[in-house]
Length: 348
Image (cartoon, rainbow, N blue to C red; front, side, top):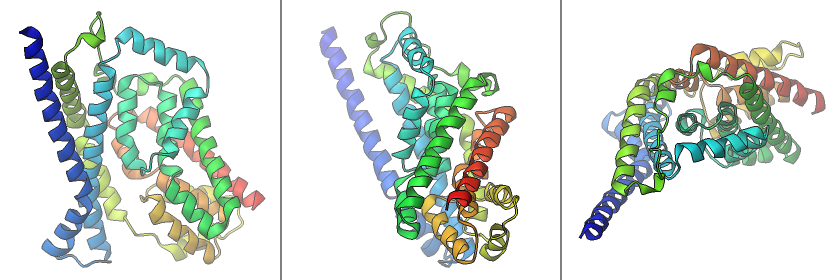
């Protein structure tokens, strides 16, 4: 009787999980057309205008990021219920002892994850909350938005294979080295306290003894706690990104980036950080800048700053990182991008 009751409860749990998964997929799949309908048909904003595109951007990105955040945290927590605390510590400890291996794997995962900077944050939060070494999580966070198939294809089509290959190599190097540096600095004390407090505490016994109902309840509770703490930062970050979305003064930027002065690369990076776009949105702008006389390395450094160090991303990260660690992250990645810009200008 007990086994029959347990099997029935598992069946109910799987059924509810299946319905939730279908609902999540439908919400995510129809998000963009629904957003466009609401923005341009119901609210009657004009397509192509700065205001209309900004409203559409906000209405699309906020639920998208929250859906990704909820889904990733839920799945990661479910997976973690199959590992005891000691087993998790052993696995992570073994990987972290091999300096650079985890960073390479995380950066490679970032390459095949087609997310913009804000979309990569949910996975980053899940990794940190799971206890994965901090430097490894930063390697993923850097690589995910900077290197993806859209960027590679567009760069190849516009500038040829040499530029595309050099861009991939430099982006991967930035992600790996920056992650290693941050990891070596031992900055875990600058992660917000609630992240460590919410780390999974498995029972002393066999973690596999948990029922599926208990696993789902644990995952749902963890997801509610994390989303409840970061959702406002998501809204604020995306609101700022929406406000500046699509507004890039190409003529003024071309004047700065076309100069051969040593300061043109760092200035381009500083200009790029407050802006927000994904690779598909910024590469055509980079192409236009180069056509207007901007140096290739300076323009690509600007592009890396826009998609790898955006202001909305830093606002969302601020909820889980203390200002000191956020400053280290921006500083390390910013310096790496500047050096990459100089390298492109030197060899191309």
